[in-house]
Image 1 (cartoon, rainbow, N blue to C red):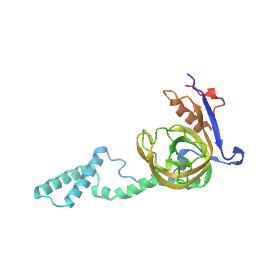
Image 2 (cartoon, rainbow, N blue to C red):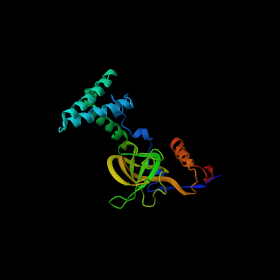
Image 3 (cartoon, rainbow, N blue to C red):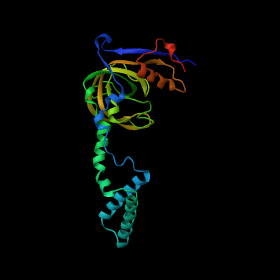
Length: 251
């Protein structure tokens, strides 16, 4: 069964006067933050749980107000947990000392934007999610790299999310509408929370874009199985080409 799809181009600037660099989502990440020593990465689930048990039990002991029997039981619990970790060649105290260092490194890897794209006019394909208007009344959308993010699956890392100021005559017609955006991209971290599909979602975005050209679906008949939407976005992403006719997209 064929689903007729019409495309529409919304533009505040013409293609002829807007020089844009085509980028993909990995280009937004500061690669210098991606490689670091993470001693937790190779731990098994049981070892992570054992480490949590040691930290929590030590915290309970430090609070006091325990009987001698309770204190002895907790000390034996810690000793057994530490012994199991040491038998596996793991230095518990060193590993616990590393947790905030590793947390900071993981945060940097997830949030730091690539300075090479900051302030550039770029073209990027993704999935648009409508959002509440900005304080100045301008329409807002969020762009994410994969369909389903922020609704049925968690939001992406902040450096894989873009808060977009869109033109007045366009908003996503449905959650995760595939689009190709062209506009000025800046590193300008934002944090917002609003309701999407399954409830309130925290939207942390490293980037903002002033969208100047929006290439999007305009009129469509939504099929029961909309895998074609993913196929369409992938076509835009890999070839940079829009269908030559409405009937080119088929299920």
